[in-house]
Image (cartoon, one colour):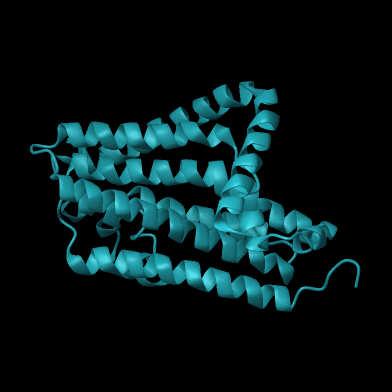
Length: 267
């Protein structure tokens, strides 16, 4: 299929998904209430560590406004995960268990494209909006507004964060070809990624190394916030792009490796 055909297919995927999801509009209010509740709880904890209750200072050299940027980036990415990653990649496990993955592989379309973008959940959009609103509020409280190049770098870093988050989720979901109860590992991943709601410099050295080089949580939220503050160096910026691109390429190769070991339901 050509690129325009993929774009048309993508549009039709999401049009049908939106039509189906709009039958349950009360879900939007439920998700909005859940998002606001989680955000209020996170802000309370953040105020104890970085706000006036912390004596006017913060952990790891981060100010209240900078910590808000990190929390906003985390909330935005969590909304993206709820909108795209959970509904799409979560279905891989079900399709492997039921044998319906065979029908996906027989379609004249790239299977990773189909599995990654087949549907979306608009109920995760409140999280995306809340994250953007929190980041804009934090920027408005800064002593000096960020330069245009800092904004551009932050946007690029957030896009790289989305790509990195997708790669992590996709590799874990593709592992269901070997492991049946993969959702146990998924919950562990979600709990670990929750560490990204605070600046990585606030953690002890050992945990900081783990969240940077083993599970790259620092690249998801801390680096975009540092870019917006104008504090990210070339090494951090280039490193984030390289890590995201490498993770995406590895997820592609891992998917082909997994398919080579997949035993279809009809075989």
